[in-house]
Image 1 (cartoon, one colour):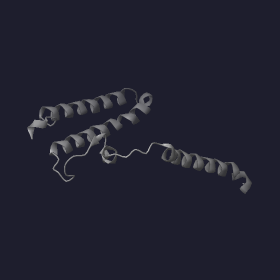
Image 2 (tube, one colour):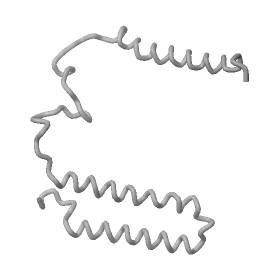
Image 3 (tube, one colour):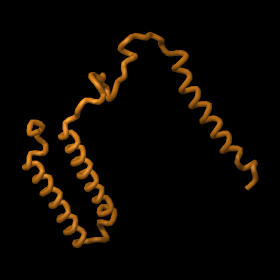
Image 4 (cartoon, helix red, strand yellow):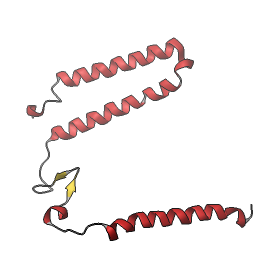
Length: 121
């Protein structure tokens, strides 16, 4: 390929860069500039922060987060099965049935143990 063949690609990058720069700069220059204390606050997930950032967080918060990640990752194992569903026939259906029953059993076990109860700790 000759360097001339790359001109359309170069034009694409130049136009994309110009559009991105204009999209970022235009609101800065045309937007309202009203400053107040509420706008200067640090906001995380729509909630205004309060207290010290180093305050204690209940262990239960982390336990539920870990369980969510665990079950979320287990669900990912169902995607390869769904892709190969027609090739696996009854064997694959029985295997994923056992897998699903084990997941449900695990969920019921941690539920009965009271892991989801905030007041237990």
